[in-house]
Length: 546
Image (cartoon, rainbow, N blue to C red):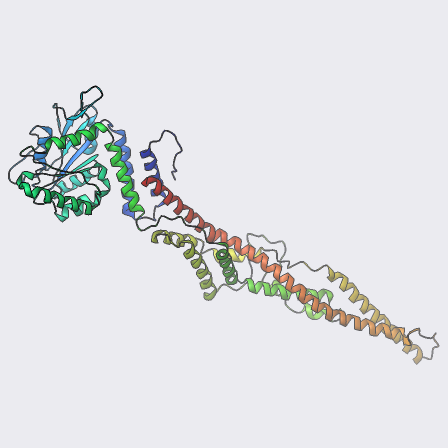
């Protein structure tokens, strides 16, 4: 994709053309296809025109049938070159009058103007130069073009095509048809942005009485302003009597000697295309949604992906493992026969390939899919707020670019998140040792009591059993061992609940971070790239419009 070249030698027109090309590329599939095509045609046309003669200014006479366009052409050139007739003649081929032939042939070939006449009579500008001499308008190509209201399609196409190529547009109107809606709507109005290279000539003013001329010219001026020509250059002339012809010559000669018409024409073309590209847009830069919106997206995707289910399984699995390690040894088998919820979700496996690891969470149903889609849609809507409809569509498409793979990516992210599934608490082994000591103590006391009972049964005489505070030691061993195991088991159950809640909170944070990473990669980053593209587009449009 092309970008603006930073160069100190580039002219303002070159910078504008580069900006237009950048905007066209950035707006591909996001702007009206016809506008994009028109932009590429303009860029190609501008490139070609700038390689051709810069010493020649092309002035085109455009007019309706009967406007006296060809007669006016002859009057300005001073020679009877163009074919004229009294009964509404029709010009069928473009005709060129050339002042200064060297370098003009390639330009006329590009314009597809084959009928050419080299003129020897100078077209002078009556402003004195530095040394008091008149300036001669050399390097001028004056075109008499087919009537733009011709019933012949080919003639109209030629006029339309050359209206997009000439440097100066001269609209030749007549008192009878100067307000013709077709003329203004189809030709003058679409090129109203080209006011700096447009001249309107009201020909045949000799047909108007003196007191009619002012009102007609004022009427025509108001129509031109309504067309979009803010300050129209308007001349009243008569090819038949010669009235106003010198003024028209001076106007043309002034443009030619200035040597800026080609640049102004192309600049006007660029501005017109840029305006069409930006139609319906406020040209305001978009911003990525704020952090709360991103968090809301992550939260809803986490819910849709089953993070709550995993967090609940982490809590229950922790308590189950704690009971296996710290519960009363005689009842631990009960925990071992219970299914581990994390193992059922395939979240407790070791030595697995992260790229292949998946959970055993249920496949997202219609509700979960709808929840994820809604979250993505809301994020895209907020991101595209204020953008033109086409860019809103492109931002929504960008947000859904990973829609097909999003469920699997979320599942893989959950499967590969370290939720501490195989990590126990530091106090589990300590409590386990105490539990076994209490059990062994109780068993030792029970065996001692059993030995005493057997000795008494077989009438053996044994030393007196030691006592503590009047209680036999073996009895104390049994009672205290059992009580300690039970109390410790109950206490560890409460502590395990607290630990399970903490482990669940940590797991939720870790899982949310994993989901946020997927959301950033699949939704936020594509949307951000499209927003950046939009902002670069409007930046290029602004540079092209300046």
